[in-house]
Image (tube, rainbow, N blue to C red; front, side):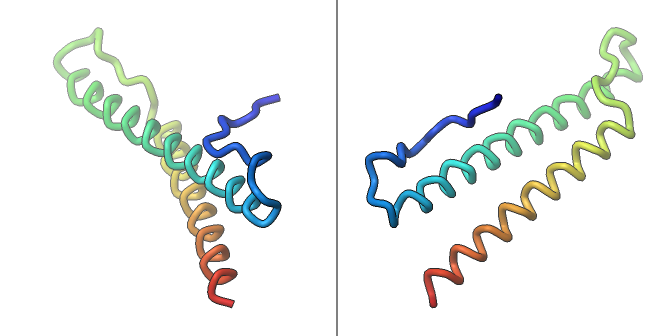
Length: 93
């Protein structure tokens, strides 16, 4: 089973901070994954542009795959945003 990288080790923290550490770990993983995917899509788009002049530079993703990955990015960042908003609301209560 996949276990995300632990940026902040929660065991060393007080119980009240452990949930914040878990959130930060999840948020960092999502943001780094999103950045990597955006870079990959940009790189592939450049290959699409080059494919018109060079048959060896075929795009990695077709239109359907590109669309699915873009929706995945939007949903992932939307869920992260919702969790951030919930954390902010919890701090102000």
